[in-house]
Length: 85
Image 1 (tube, rainbow, N blue to C red):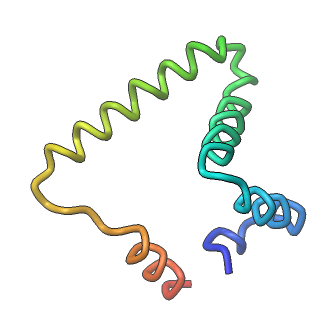
Image 2: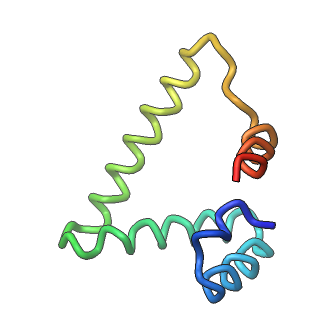
């Protein structure tokens, strides 16, 4: 079961299942394009949007690396989320 399947249409779930069969690189490229498409309505240049995301990701990575407390693993988070529904 997908974590977000409760809020997605059947068609979106089908597309996601298919996308999850792609290589990690292809999934990353697809995710970047999908995120960029959300910002297209603003009229912003996609290159500016991507640059802003790069800055934000860098900030979050630096913040995470500086944090002495380990974060939650993806497996633990997924398990916790699936049991809270």
